[in-house]
Length: 93
Ligand SMILES: [Zn+2]
Image 1 (tube, rainbow, N blue to C red):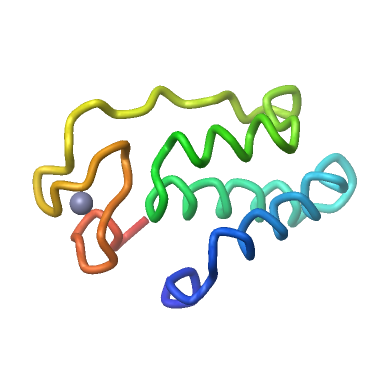
Image 2 (tube, helix red, strand yellow):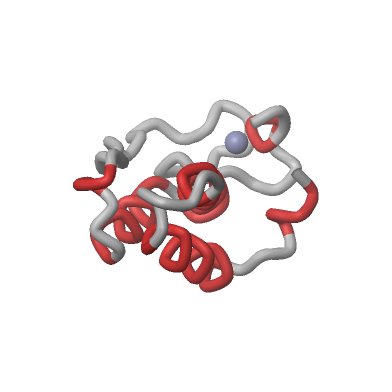
């Protein structure tokens, strides 16, 4: 997933917001929302992903807010579920 490294938080939020409007009708929308929330959580932390869930009313569409991890990452030491770009947790997801 090289491409998510060049997207900004606003880029991800825009694509989530757009996909959320058609999530019940367009087959790819569900995947786009899930991909976007995962990218936001890894890059900017779970609190930021939860904010998108609230802002775009995604809980009612099947994306509950997630508990924010309290322990820092073992490898990159970032907190809140976020990771540095070169952390191993950014790979294979
Ligand atoms: Zn990490």
